[in-house]
Amino acid sequence: MIGTILPIVIFGFSFGLYEVLFPLYMNFLNISLLDMGFAFTLSALFVTIANIFIGERSDILGRKIFFSSALLLGGISHLTTSFFSNLIPLTILKILFDTSVAIKNAVFVPMLFDQDKENFIPAYSKMSGLEFIFQAVGLALSGFLAEFLGYHATFIVSGILQIFGFVVFSILFVERTRNRIINKSNNVKSYSKFPRQLVVLSVSGLILFIGSSASHSFITPLFFSDKFALSPVMVSILMTIHRLSLGIPLMYSDKIIKKLKRFQLKFYLMLFVSIQGFFTAISTFPNLFVASAFLWILHDFIGASLWLPIRNYMIQLYCREDSRGKDYNLVSSISSIGNIVGPFLAGVSGSMSINLPFRLSGIIIILSNIPLYML
Image (cartoon, helix red, strand yellow):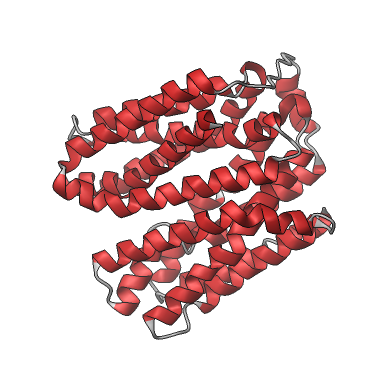
C-alpha cells in the first residue's frame, strides 16, 4: 500500500506547490501575462491531444510503467525549471510537467480498478482525498518556501521528492492486471463500438467541466479579492481551505456511497452535481466574505466529494475490459474540453460582473444532468 500512497502524496504536494510557484516564478522573470497565457494554453492543448494515446498504450503495456514515468517526468521538470529564464524553455518544461500530470490522471483510475474492482470506491476516495489534502499543503507552503528558500531551492526540493516517489513506486508497487490485448484493428474499430453509456457520460462531463471551470481557475481568487478586497495572504488561505474542503471529505465519502449503492447511483450522481451547482451560484449573493466563502466551500464539501467517486466508478463499470485505459481517457479527453471553454466564458462574463461567472457556472453544472437521463 505504501508503494501507492507515498507517490500519490508526493504528487499532490508537488502539484499544489507548482500551481502557485510556476506563475510566481514567471512573474519574477518579468514574463508578460500574454506570454504566460501562451505557455499555459499551448500546454493544455498538447495534453488534451496526448491524453487519449496514453490511455490506449497503457492497455497494452500496463499502468505501472506509465505511472512511474509520470513521477520521473515531473521530477525532471521541477529539477530543471529554475535553470531557465526564457519563455520557450519554460513553456517546454511546463508541457513536460503537465504531461506528467496527464499521464498520472490517465492511468491512476484504471489502475485502481484493475487492482481491486470490489473496493474501487474506498481506494479511490482515500487516495484522491490524500492527494487533494497534500495539494492544499503544497498551496499553503508555496509562498513561504519561495520567500525563505528561493525559487531555485524550492523547485529542486520538489523535484527530488518526485524522483524519490518514482523509486518507491517502481520498487514496491506490484501490478496485478496487465491487459496485453494487442489487436491492431482495435485502434480504428473500437471507437465505432464505444459504449452508449460512455457517450452519455462524455457529453455530461463536457457540460459539467465547462460549468466547473467557469468558476475555478483564475476567476476564483479574483472573485474574492475584488468583491471583498482580500489581501493575497487571505486569498491564499481561502484557496488552501478550498482544496481541503474536497480532500478531507473525499477520504470518507466511500462510507456514504456504500449506503447509497443499494439505490440507483445515477440519481445520486445527479443529486450531488446539482448540490455543487446550487452552492456555486448562491455563494455570490451574500455581501459578507465569511458567508460567501462558507457557501462556496460547501460546493466541494457536500457536492464534488461525493459525485467524483460515483462518476469515476460508473465510467469504469461501462469501460470495456480490453480497452479500459483507452475508453476512460476518451471520456476524460472529451470532458476536459470544458476546461478550455470554461475559463473563456469566465473571462467574458466576469468583465460584465464579477458575480456572473459563478452564477453561470452553477446553472451550467446543473444542466449537465440532462444527458444523464439517457443512461
